[in-house]
Image (tube, helix red, strand yellow):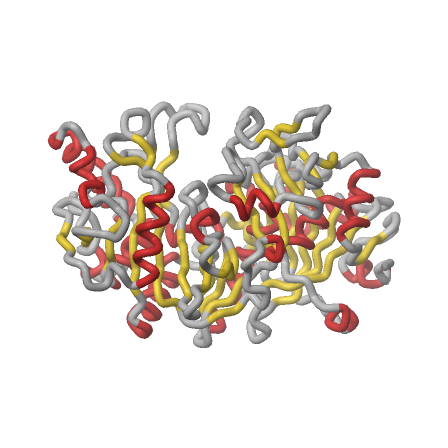
Length: 526
């Protein structure tokens, strides 16, 4: 299982310690324990702590600004340019740091459809991070490994600290994508999500070139082979609602939509675990076992029992496991054309309807908006709910302008006559702290009705402020909760809060240029 050193020499990585290539899961766990990178929890999961960085660091993400890509990339706060000269300097310093260090190599690929897959070699300083990426990417067969040739290489060295004045970056951490040299480097941060999302950023760059829409969504399959997509930002219920015991999970986070259908980009899941319970999310609960990597979850030092309710380290506690840990998952990772799309939002202002049906234009508007809200107390300085907008429900990972992805989605919705719904998994009856969160069983009932076609022939009315079509009835859901104003004690207070949120939508949407009028007019009325 040694890697031919010449492969590393081609990357400028020389004079290393031991190199381990494609170790099986138990051996990676043994190595991680031996190196004191973490401990085993009572349920068998490998428990680790990522230190200063407990989430992604978007201000430290760069794309190398080469002539080959300069005109393609939507440069700005999301895609920060780094000069080739600074990249070369940073890269040489990083490879020098790796000298005499043991390295762990995983050869895998992104994209379960063989027509669109991308071979990626991942080189890790830490054994547990190699375990994580082994579980999250797609794993080649032994025969495929015999002839494996990497198209891209990802090097992750958390122990290397950048020096901004030398490297041209912003802090000790840097996540740098070099599309021209087919290299990704991650330095200074131990958060595993940076590896996962760097690969997703790569696929967001490559797939549109092949007329495939990359999507930050989960996907599942009904017993009649009907495919559903779930878009939503962190905390909206994307993973929870797609892990449905009555349907088959295709994937929980990243997919491509080609002319043949949908395919999972990954081979694993990266579930948020804060307040996880066996009762509400039994499939995720059972998936956290030997072979799973859990990050920043408080653990009892004696019993080694994980405390999913403790957010003292971070709200962003995570578990990474292979998709086959979910019992009713689609192992091949592919399915047909979607029949239904669900946009998820956790509206902490308590004013959006629990479910509404969207036209193609409304779907494109809300796809470009990518709305949810942050809650008071989850981040320093936030004392009341804050509206958050992330284009295409994944703006931090989009190398191109968002309208490119939105146009692709609109074309597919129109061509295949896909039903699109906006589902609020957040609050009703008042904002966070006054109202209450919509009960998960009711949300599940609304989603089920949407997927089963039970909302196709019911009567709808247009919300006067949000410009959304709200069903007058939904099976197994009380009629009164469908119209959010009914749940507020004060109608005037509801309308005031609703208009404030509508204006936040309009203010955010104004940043987009060259948007057709019919899409602009499909949004809330400010």
